[in-house]
Image 1 (cartoon, one colour):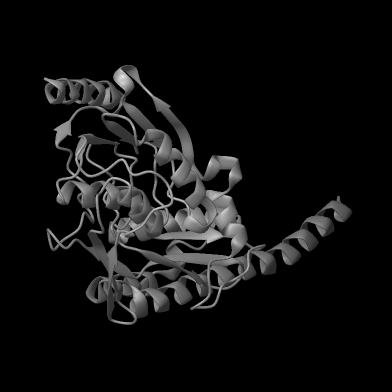
Image 2: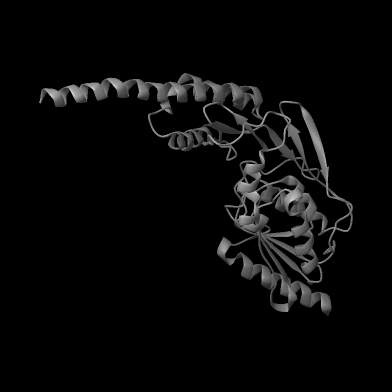
Amino acid sequence: MLTRCLVLLAFAVTSVPAAAQTIEMQRKVVEKAADLIEARYVDPTAGKRIAGALRRKPLEIASTNSPAAFAVAFTAHLRALSGDGHFALNYEPGSRAVPEGEVIDPAELERWYGAHVNHGFEQVRRLDSGIGYLDLRVFAPTSMAGDLAAAAMSLLAQSPALIIDLRNNGGGMGEMTRLLAAYLLDGSREMSADYDRPSGRTTRHFTPAEVAGRRFGGTKPVYILVSKRTFSAAEAFAYDLQAMKRAIVIGEQTGGGAHPFAYRPVDYGFVLSLPEGRSINPATGSDWEGVGVTPDIRVPADAALERAIAEAQRATMSDTR
């Protein structure tokens, strides 16, 4: 009995410092995140408020849970404080912390946009009446998937109408949104600009004047399918083409994430996805942050493809009369 008590006592003595160390580590992560948010979050007033809330109760989130569980809890807390779906804390002990000014870690690019997801190109096919259909799940960097974009759009260029399905697309790279948009236009057009709070710079963006594949062109009908899961760069694509009256958006109100973010290391293997900018559409002067893209034709997501096919058939039939 005495031996058992001594073993339990020894276990308690050695386990308390480990738990305390975990709490202290997580508290430091919260404090570092608060500093970054106050200095860099796109909305300075909101950034100061969020940082203050984190500093007042840093142990409200910290716990003895695993690092991955802590990251999930902290992400939920940040989004509740801000309403910004781009906020996230990830535990990535094996990843390389990328200093400001460098490109994203290639391993991260492969993880989100690599060959295992076919760089986002899920389906390219022709439906009834020759209507083109592209199911795109992510907007990959053009360096990884520019050739796939050219191949896919060349196959679809002869279609009398085109449906682009973004119902399961959570975002990606703005450069790919502009490249794909170029295939739907007859010349270069301006899309949403990016405002960067840390530098104070606003960068305007235009679709490329030249593309490698065949253009679908700027006159035939285009329909973009969206859902509540459609987010970030996928929303930018739908919003910009809707604003320039080049596409009809069909489906559900989208997720409402218009703040470009950067990866910021916060020590101990944690990386903060920090929204540091906002999008500014040249036609509306605004963006879709917090409200989402409003469909031109509102239907449940699972009925959007059927509705788009009907709209496309009606439009192409009227064009041939």
